[in-house]
Length: 398
Image 1 (tube, rainbow, N blue to C red):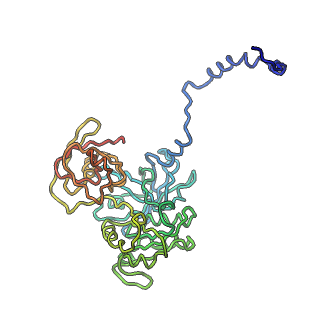
Image 2: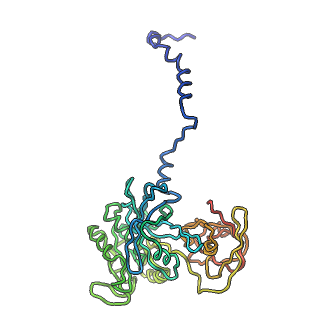
Image 3: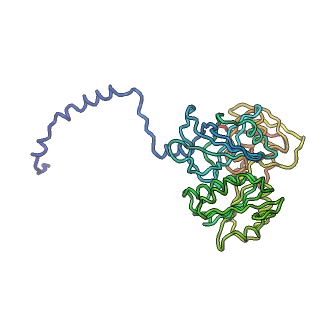
């Protein structure tokens, strides 16, 4: 079959370029690098910047507070971290620690707003850490960290942040002690124009002199243009300009707006136990009441009873002592073994491990396992306490 078309234009195209294509290609290949070219999708590059496996930082500044200190962390460029990962206001990082041979990580909220982590240079986090009892990690940090020290931290973690799809436009925050840190981050994000919601903070302290970050918090609230309100509540003294007592449902009603609102809580476990009953009087839907994780769960009084923990790790076995009132995670860390963990509250799932044999106690308040985990014998060691000798398999590479 013949095609009828004008071939005059095609005949004008010189053939020299086609005839020399193979030799030119061969010369370029010979002149190229011997290694294969490596490309990376933008989505992967973004994921690495937002969720780094580790961030190497230095302590640039230390500020003193009553029974607390604030540490400004900046990238340790000499060890490969050029900038710190961006985060949602009120997320946390896990800090790697080695205390007397024990290898552990502890979660601490990034107290500063996410605006300080924006940009390619000059990024920073601020962690405000208060002495807790019991709490050997906070005691060690407050006694040992100093400006110039190098520290390793995780990328930002946690889902205790404002979400306009899930949460009401107005948030009433209940804070106790160092539980002010996530709400400070939210307040700073609002003041910087990064977050857009109304925040009323009811901050419980024992005395006026003991209010952590009072001046800093009041300054951020003033900068927020009325979108952040701070109410200080003192339990151990009465003073003009302060509320007196506890963070009750009546107090929430007094300062909550008309209509819909969310309640966020951050503080010690005892505070959560109190508020769980107290806030029932508000009649809010369950989705409107949220609380931050409380960290290490303490299961009852100290006990002298101990058991043997046989740990299966990368095909090898080690036998450790595990105490009845301490989590299996504590026993693993005390032996100097770095096991995966972050929230230490039984919810994030990073310490997911297989219970081969033995009996453990998992407090209902700290049992964040899926139904399948319970059925097939998986536990979170950070919230599991031995009630017999235990055989456990962990996966540090997970």
